[in-house]
Image 1 (cartoon, rainbow, N blue to C red):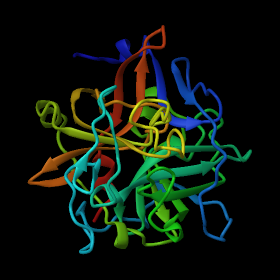
Image 2: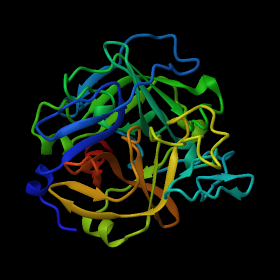
Image 3: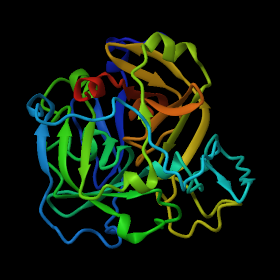
Length: 327
């Protein structure tokens, strides 16, 4: 598929967070809407808002480890995200399966739960990339329409059916470094729709964290059907469907995982992929297996829809920004 800026302008771009109201970012940008007001269980007592810093001003902050992963010794490796007691769930109605495993690397993926200046709740997806750092989208912590910063943001690791392994591990975000505040052009906002969240707890020591690799887009495209995508989609899992009756926490409270999706094109530092996404999956990692190790290779952030509202293709952010922040 060959895509260019003129082609993009003919579609509606929907950022895949779950927010309280539809938001127009530009003449062709919008946000998928949904509200959630449930606060994380046992959050930090510190109620101060996170400190927000533009990436250009974040010279004092650097990621350590150069993208290396960490698997805790007490967490075994699980190749399948729906692995529970050695059994694999059989899901037939779409390409996604529920992420049920509390083993590594799935343990490092969680829900980003935010509250805006009016107290309206929303959620996205995030992934631990250091012992106290989470990777997600800028629009998961900044309202693209008003450009206001979220008042409170939390990270709940490895949420399954609304539950974390330990309620005390829900972490509060204290600092945010962001790539865009949505004051630029539509293309610029898309290219820089990333955020690094600093947590008040080093929960990555317990849950592990994923490594990442900035791979040339030509190589990403060449490896079709080789990627895994995990996100807390706002339409999943529907417990009215057969086989999902046990997911009583509701939509968006268990992550969906898709194995075997592709990055199909790249243009103007924007990646195009066919992994299944809906509201709530913003900030979800696109994962590739490199030398036998799961590593983040791109960051999901939006979907393109035609004039009828039908999904056409999904967008992702390359990881070159992480190289600039690393040492």
